[in-house]
Image (cartoon, rainbow, N blue to C red):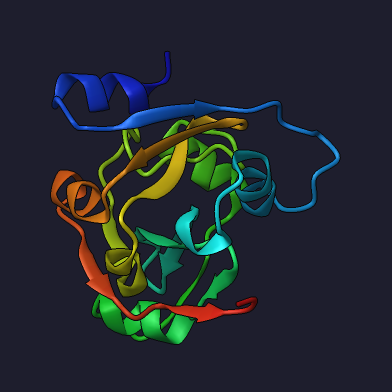
Length: 159
C-alpha cells in the first residue's frame, strides 16, 4: 500500500483504485495510463514538481495531454519564475519515483495548483504512488484534500 492510498483511506476519500500492467518501454507514463485504463487523456492527470527562483518546490497537476505553462504556474504561486525541479529533488521531497509521483501522501506538503479544466470532468485519475496504479476521484475532492487551487496552468498539446 502506498502513502497515497493510506492517506485516502485515513481521510475517508471517495475513490476507486485502478491497477494496470505498466510497460517499462512506455515513453509517456500518463498517456500509457489513459490508454490502458480506456479513458480520455483529458481525464488523466500528471503530478509535476516545479522549483521557484528561491528554490521552493510546488506541485502542478495537469492533464497528461498537456504541458505545464511555467509562466502561468509562476504567476499562480506568486513568484517571478519557475522551472521543472531536478528529478532527484522530486523523489527526495515527495517520496515517490518519477512516473509514480502522487499528489497525495507526499513526504513534504507542497503548494499545489490543479489545472482548472479538471473541474469539467466527472472524475479524474492521478497516480496512486507507483507506476501502473491510479486513483480515480473528483477534482474537487483532490483540491480540498490538498488545499489546492484551480488555475489555468496548462498548455494542451493533444485534443
